[in-house]
Amino acid sequence: PVRRQIEESYLAAEELSARVGKPFLNSELCCLCRANPYDLALDICREHHTGWYLFELMIDGYWSDVHGIFYPDGTVRDPSIPAAVLGFRRKRDEGMVYPNANKEGYAQRGISMVKEALEEKTKVFRAGRKSIDEVLEAAEFCANLLEACELVPMYDPPTARIARIRKAGDEREARKLAYELALLLQDKCQLL
Image (cartoon, rainbow, N blue to C red; front, side):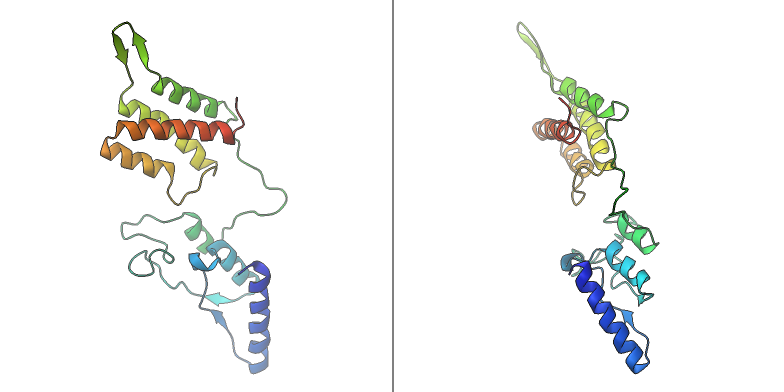
């Protein structure tokens, strides 16, 4: 649902609550596959002074792909979810300040790091490449900027992809990802 539809449901519930003299609470909210993200759903609950409860605290079992906040090891699917539970929400109106990944030249620096890491040093009868660790370190620099400035989707963050490649030791995939991240950072920061 969209905000208008959710608001209409709350108004109907408030009218019914007043008519029958009983309080109400929302027991169906914050399901990722139902288009009611935590910050939106909980914000509306607060606006209407409505009680609520979380259906599933842990990411586990049948509902793990659409419900839950915490993995058994204490990590989270999305840090904005516990933030929403604590009352923090994303600014969505005028006055938003967009992050600037290149404010101090770090985006350009990351792109240069990847360029250097991918460059093949060639001489007559000799060629040399940077190690996979050096390539992934340059990729991680770009990934950190992209993630911190929310310039990439976080359902599979670039740093998670880097960790998988680092564990697998796949040089080809490392070089490919570093290249992709540098191009993405260049595009998102509108750098030439």
